[in-house]
Image 1 (cartoon, rainbow, N blue to C red):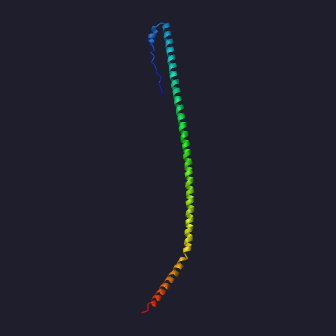
Image 2 (cartoon, rainbow, N blue to C red; image 1 turned 45 degrees about the vertical axis):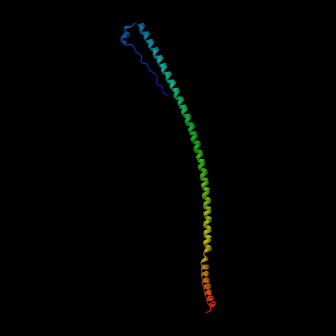
Length: 147
């Protein structure tokens, strides 16, 4: 917290009044004024020095706090980046695993499709056999039923 130096207004005797005083009185007044001015300047310097020390301590505390916070944020950021790297690695592994399984499924489907191409001729043969069996059944039924 800044403290403003306390300033005093010095009453400087009027020059006309000083003319009325004796030389010795004038010299005494001048010495007293210079002593008062010197004391006031010294007090003002002390106040400025004290305030400067307080400001320096405040800045030192502020920078220590900032350094600590920056260090904490940096370490937290590093932790988050490590976590993100681990998660990205796991996602990549899962994606590769899923792609491998997908390729296996596609290959199995293609193989099944190739095997199923011959099924059309088998279906045609089954239809012919079915007609023949139906015809045979009809013939047997006619023969078994004698009128």
